[in-house]
Length: 79
Image 1: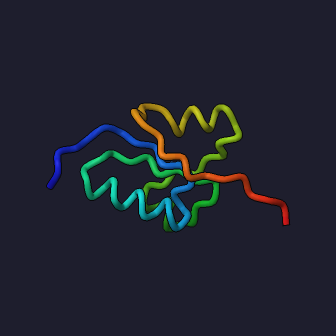
Image 2 (image 1 turned 45 degrees about the vertical axis):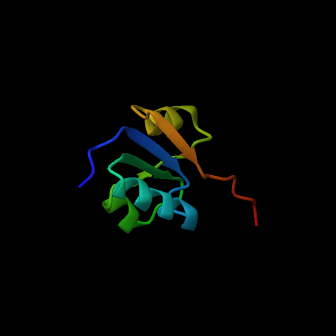
């Protein structure tokens, strides 16, 4: 098993690309803060953080302790 690396926040972690990045980081020993505004019950039980990054307080909470950010989140379009 790899040595635990620094904490990385992955925004948009519930999407296809986000899930792949989270999986790769975990396999390489990183502490991952998987974050998404849309998180299923299974995602939340697995440790994903539900956060709206357009809200300053929620963004600060998601990024707390992170040494790096992989930003894959996007704005949802109405309709």
